[in-house]
Structure formats: C-alpha cells, structure tokens
Amino acid sequence: MAQIILSNATAAPTTGTAWHPRDTSSLATYLFHSFQAVGNTSATTGAATVLIEVSNDGTNFITLGTITLTLGTSATSDGFAVANTWEYYRAKVTAISGTNATVSVYMKG
Image 1 (cartoon, helix red, strand yellow):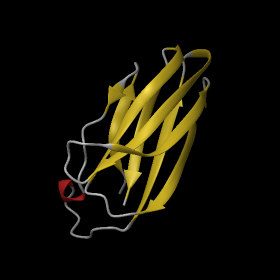
Image 2 (image 1 turned 180 degrees about the vertical axis):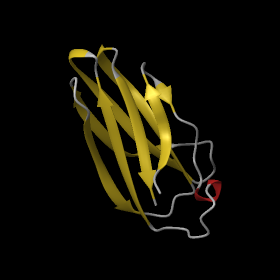
Image 3 (image 1 turned 135 degrees about the vertical axis):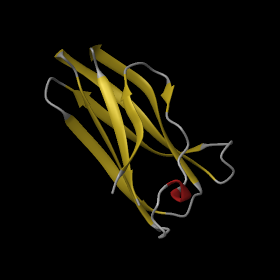
Image 4 (image 1 turned 90 degrees about the horizontal axis):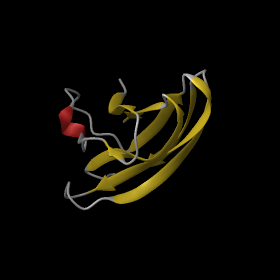
C-alpha cells in the first residue's frame, strides 16, 4: 500500500514529515521505490514543483528527484521510480500556484 508522505499542500515551501520504512506495519524493506505527486486547482490553471528528498540520518536531506506538475481543475499527476536504500524519505513542495491549488505526494516501496 502506498504511503501519503505529503497531504494537501497549499503553500510553498511545505515539507512533509520524514518517513522511514519501519513506520509501516510491513516487515519487508524494499529496494525499489516509486513516488507520485497529484494536484489540482479549483479554477483556471497552475503549477507545482515537488522535491523528493532522502537522508540516512533523518536530519540532513538531499534531493533524490523533482516532480513538476501543470495543474488544472482535473487532477494531474507525475512521478518516478528508483532503486535505492536510503533510510528516510520526504516530499517538499517548493512552488505552487493556481486558485486553491493543492498537491499530495504518495510513496510505494
């Protein structure tokens, strides 16, 4: 099951709570991870930029990848998958625009 690592962000910057694979009831530790950002606006168009950040100590994060969305009144999404073994993962919205724009980020793995 995918984890929500950032829910309904409406402003930038917004940083989600660091997530560790031990935070789930699953006993499996996965080498492969996928990330998906989903967003929309209530009117017109907008845009959002989301960084997926990783860390081995839970304090010092670096950017693993960037997801850029063009937002509209229908939900739009994009994402990527990687093979890695970082300890902690989080999402950070660095830019968001549009009428009542919101973005959520999901992680699987």
